[in-house]
Length: 106
Image (tube, rainbow, N blue to C red; front, side, top):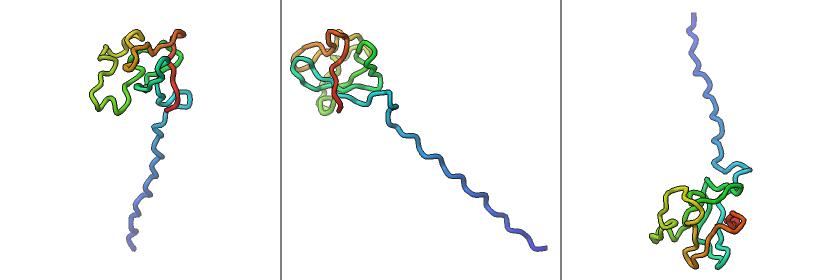
């Protein structure tokens, strides 16, 4: 009898990689705009939720300011309250009177 050659099983196709894009109901990175001088020194992080009162974990210093050694919120503890969120240019609070951040698409 002739020997049958063993066939290699077909390789399984890999599932496509999951997108790292944010979910549709999660905002992407937004610029945080100072309500007084209109300066843009911060951007939102993955912790930003427009439905919650902002805190320091929701924003981070933008480039090139980070690489220049600027302090991020003067180094408060992560998640510190909105009272420490001030514009480095004019000193105005970033949190508006309605307890929101003024943002715009980056």
